[in-house]
Image (cartoon, rainbow, N blue to C red; front, side, top):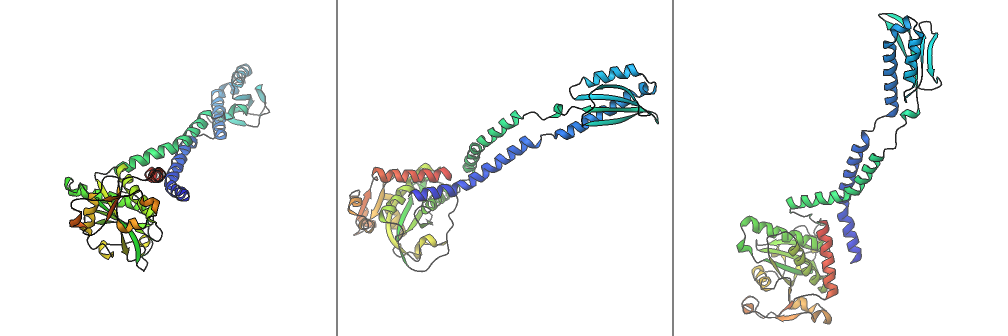
Length: 369
């Protein structure tokens, strides 16, 4: 069954992986989208500063105040972002200069009073000052987002599962022709009288949904029965008697762990399906040869104990000698009234290896449902 577990895990992981990827992408976009363009910032700073100097020194340029302009040039070029400043008169002659004039980031502004040009200001920005720092915080936030996305996805899916009790329905192929010997797990909702109509319908829906999960492991079809329970129909061609037992115990373990108000008991018997149950999308008990008396079968299921498998003599006959040794003859005072002439057997537990396999299957299903 290792191949199935890997396949099942891969299928079930795809929606979770997609959700985690989307969450991670959104988080990384939010972290990095706001990163400013350093070249644009330098352009804006240089242009603004050059125009400000031109406006504030227009009078000094008109009066040819070389000392004042030299002092201003020294102060401005002392800034970390500025390599050098040059003041020109209206004839483009240098009046005052400070710092280096070799930078490639040069910005020039015209100084004027009213409509009269009094000179020009030229400044060179430091290339190093506008180099973007290493975005340690952004990188740390990105790593945290990548690590947190899977956990957040699991939390969201668990919260979603609390509000939505329905489980994914296993897709089935079109019905095929030909009678097919089958195993039938009859599931009785034994506490139906203690439930309201809505609760009873939900419990039966839970049993059918869990049955469909079992049918993803053991090919078959799950359907409700007369508003009293449900039925799993398993193809005897692809499911052995031992696997039918596994399916019976797996279903009960899933229903025990799943959040449902229903309490269920199971009876495993044989019948004949009009087609391959694993390929049918519609089936009713009335179409099954051997299920003419569903009420009696559900009554037999009600006689079973919790987490045991009550099996018919036909199922018992399909087991090998070792598997038969697990079963005990079953007797009950009302058995002659509901199953006259029938011999039933009960299996209270599976051997350790088989029980462990069933538990692992249940953990995989519940972990991704």
